[in-house]
Length: 534
Image 1: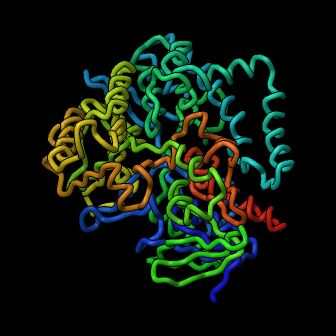
Image 2: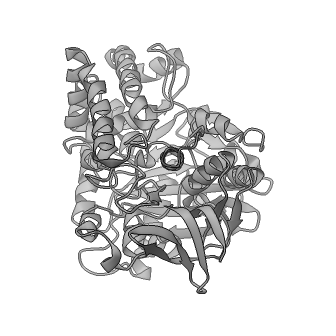
Image 3: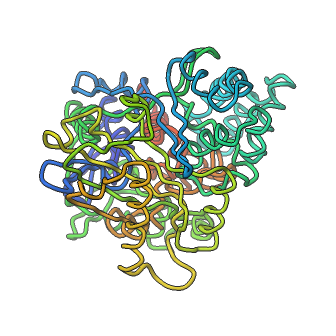
């Protein structure tokens, strides 16, 4: 029977990161994926001949420099394009643009409020402080590879030590950030409703909280996680892989292969084998069995346990604990192929911030109403829309003169309160997005040569992601850090010996691209007594 040191289920970004680290540490690694091409949520496709874009996500964001360096991805040709922070466009025709240059950005804020322009220095300082506090927690496994009751206790105490070392002022700031609604938190810095809405819109995308929901202030830190510098700087930048997400995926695939790892596509894992209480290998859909010393799952936590195992073989109570993990679809995706660049007459000509994306948003009360519609499973009436036109900065993604546009439509329920998503309702959502786009780019509909509308149910059916939840589980405080994927089993290590989670269902979730894969590799290498750079 074929045998490997480690099998990774799923060739998404985190699965490939984990496989590359393990292979570089000398393990014999096999990556299995049911799809025809690697990448998972990050995989690209052609919406029309020559028009490439990631089907399910916007495609912005970068791997941490540590992972890029450890895996030698620059040697594999990986490069990132840096863009300004984006533009928020409001229904009344106003706009708020973000700029990397601190002087320029404060001048932009002054169009709304001079007081807020000064307050931004304090806000940026506090966001950077919060990032520095979070960085040690996000950059390492939740349990640091610790095994057994006492090992886990030591790991938990290490987290407690970080908190105990905080000054009273730092502790006060942490509590405010992790308990307040985003709206209340922003009120302590800014006076203008449009400035506050601009900052809130960038943070609410992808989450299951509204801007007025307690604890939603913590999401305000997310755009700053990769930011460096001091309080004098401007808005955080947007990163995009040069050549699209396919270039990022290919660099990881090359890193796995260069270290001796093997990737097999169209190889669906249907079962994980357990013997004597230990995971021993997997079974493919064609009946083929492959043994392994360890199995890492890049699937979400519910698919990992509830679809890969016979429930009777799982420890008592595990099925119930997994079932309580909250996974909810919250976003739809609209993809466009355009035969010409969209024009934005309401924005300054040549505005560089457009390259970082556009958000179509109302004020905070409007966002809260959109959140209320989602919570009540209503068809979206005024959703928050995040738009990226990556071909503006990377012409390789479309034929000459053409462009691709991705729109992530936020607060879209997986199921409606009064029935299923019909084709008519799907088309109505697409029409709503096109209407909103036409408000800032008149005539854009005349340049559409292809359109694709994807709902959370499409994500679940095509990628196998429970409820179409792009975050692999809600990112609320009770489902983060040592509580991710669930209390008592935080991190990559699971209650099943030799079975690990390397998907964003595990710590640090989707907060750090590739972080869950790196942490899973580190945890496994520690358990094997091997040294690695993960």
